[in-house]
Length: 198
Image (cartoon, rainbow, N blue to C red):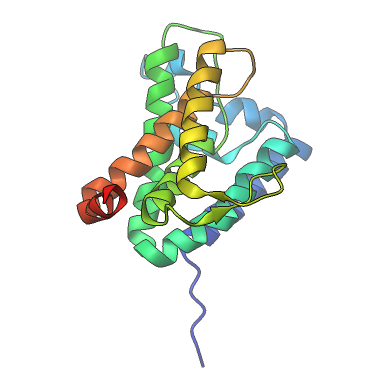
């Protein structure tokens, strides 16, 4: 009889979905409680929100697109890297993207951020380093896009959008998460970057 093993990707997926749905539909105050406020964190308060902010989302579309991306890339990366390395990658993506927000918004007492986008960007960009020619389907574009072209467009758009500052999306977290994913692979597997550049 085979033992059923539940890895960190499945646990993160279930916790993110469960906590986010509970907060959205049963206890909206939890979103406010779990949100990361750089002004507070930079002054040594509510430090746990660096992590808890990644488990709540602002609405169903925010949650859906994050879980959709997680589903298609995180489980594959867990199998490729192994459970421990995958968990480290995810947590580093979450923490580093939060730190980027803290540095930028530390004096803005009105700023708060939620969502798993930074951590998921780390997973996605680690995937792209390993599988740059794989094809991605990005809604609403109806044709597959090579992963490396998506990476260029994603980073370019996020840099532009962060400068515009016209929406409620934390584009800096996306950029820092993407950088974390690339740096993680460089640290644990420099040969992957040599293959990417060759």
